[in-house]
Length: 174
Image (cartoon, rainbow, N blue to C red; front, side, top):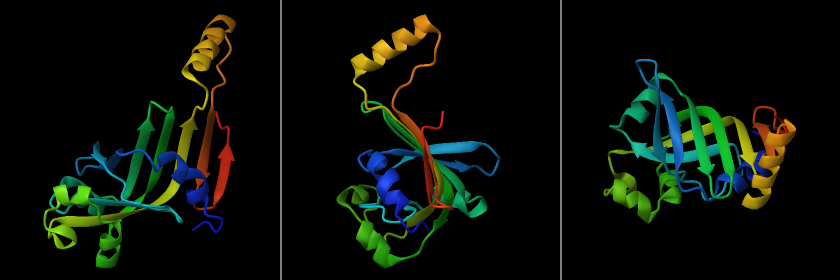
């Protein structure tokens, strides 16, 4: 785990306001399967993301066979895109379920934190890649138009990677 809270400083600000992510697992037949999920974290002081999912659903069963996952976040309105890779496991901890519980979760799991169909999934993030454009839409359009006529690649926003195994962050990777 990074000691300088790389997750909280660099990853969490990008994804914290994105309501839904696409949670991708590997199906037993080998193909990738994505489904919309809500990140349950209220903060991210370490390299963990938390999700609630159905015990009976395919995702929880797929994690038992292949724990490597990808979680994609997108906020096209703010031009923020994040791809997170990590290892997931069903985590049996009632205290953690209670800490993450929301009224929104109640809609999916009417039995509350003790619902027998409720699986708490912990994803330990190993790597993230992000794209974040802070320029206005008009500026983006002008930069793109210039690139079309100049033949040069447009320089918009920032792209970077965060590696959680080494606790490092590298910006502006093309």
